[in-house]
Length: 120
Image (cartoon, rainbow, N blue to C red; front, side, top):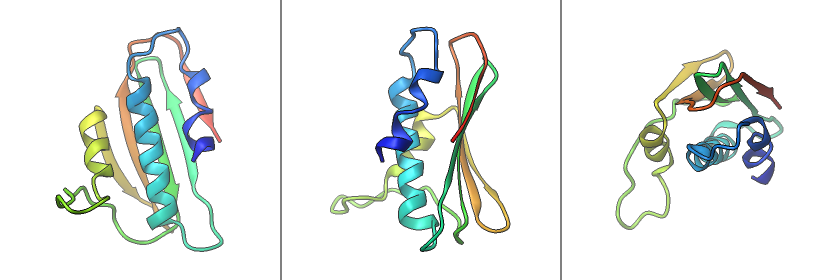
């Protein structure tokens, strides 16, 4: 998951660290969910980050079926809390249906000036 976690960081310029770890965690969670649940064998997913100076939007698109659902994992479960964390940390969160697949997205309000537009 390192490639999904780290390339965006230099694009959030200005030296401020507010929100870095929240965004990093959400990128990791959404990318991991795409790999584990959303990408059929032999296909890939797309991670895109865009910003307008006021906010940063993280999108993860995959071609798999199903609709991600926020749930609370039981006390004995090792997983199942990722989208709950994303929902709690992001300023906005949702799922957009595509044909095929879906895009899971989050928005973080930025405390920095300047534009951001990165896709990889």
